[in-house]
Image (tube, rainbow over all chains, first blue to last red; front, side, top):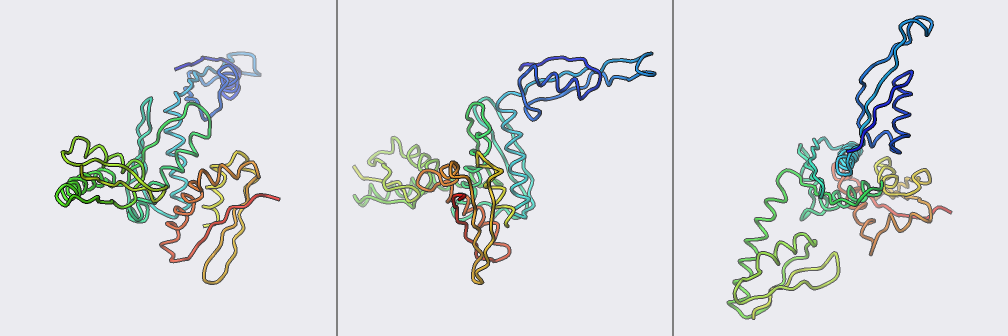
Length: 208
Length: 78
């Protein structure tokens, strides 16, 4: 992380100077005031310069905070009370929503959750910097859904194998289809393939 | 609801100051006409309408509590 230390007459002046040196916006940095500064008597006796340390946030830190801010504002405008927390590393930002109206936020088959994740990803990555993946979960919806999908995949694969007929699953988003494909990789007697156009694309299980 | 549509539009647009929303009450439903700069149409609609679809899903979810029928239309500024 890049940082500069700048001294000037006031804290504001020092921050402005530091931002210029870093070529950064206010929202992209973390500011520590090292010395408040003091105008002194008539600006002469005992005057002391203000000193600040201004550090540029890394791309994922910046995007995590932008994502949290965006989601909180969005939920407020949706008139939904919920808490949002986030963690991030170089590759992705993980956001978690908890609160009361979770059913509304998840939607039918997680459609609203997927839309929230998609729009947050776009809104945050639009601000420049390297594109970063944003994952959003509400309660433990995704974890539970993955479990459901995996047992469903096993059951339908058995059926396809037993009956010798292809079995079509409900339409799913790419992430959910991936879970099904992965689960049935190496399942004896069947293979999987996706068919159809988004958002109606679905996994088909074929008997060998 | 209007401010939600506006916020979504401004968050996705390259020219947020050219985003505006008109609320039209049709009795059985409320239509939100979202106006954006012509250059921003792609950013608001997306491939095969994927972004527009996500915007509508979120606005409809927000309308569930009030039980209102809502519809979002995306238009170019003239």
